[in-house]
Length: 161
Image 1 (cartoon, rainbow, N blue to C red):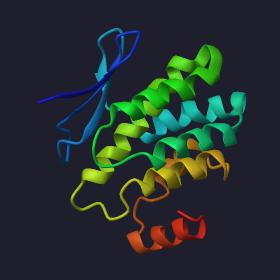
Image 2: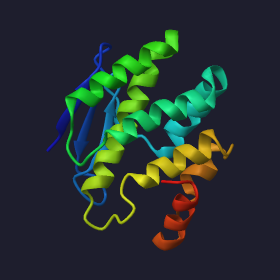
Image 3: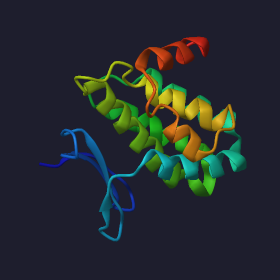
Image 4: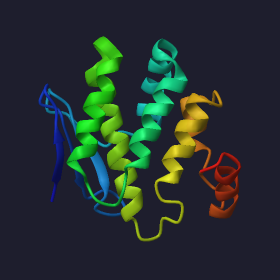
């Protein structure tokens, strides 16, 4: 059963619902009613382009502000913070707000998955690789696939997270 997290000013919305593995799949319903689960490649691709426009460090720094406030519980104050951060992206504010909301929901999902060892840190690794290490969206999204958690943990520790 869908669990509504956020409705945006354009009536798009983010929800948790049952996915392939558990009930922590993040879904976006667009203004036209299309509902889908955005992939890492999807939002990484857009954030890469927006990083070229606004600076990758800025997007990464704003992401880290959200990351630092993410727990296993949905917090309306974090969504309010996302709105405030997004205002700095001018005509792209609503798009940034939605993608940050999707990533925030994804981190909450990671924090709640029973077998996830690395939790929200896996999203931070992807964002770091995408924005600061100049990985492509595909490379950042697929980097962790097939790798042992200990190897990924070492990479994260080397990056101080």
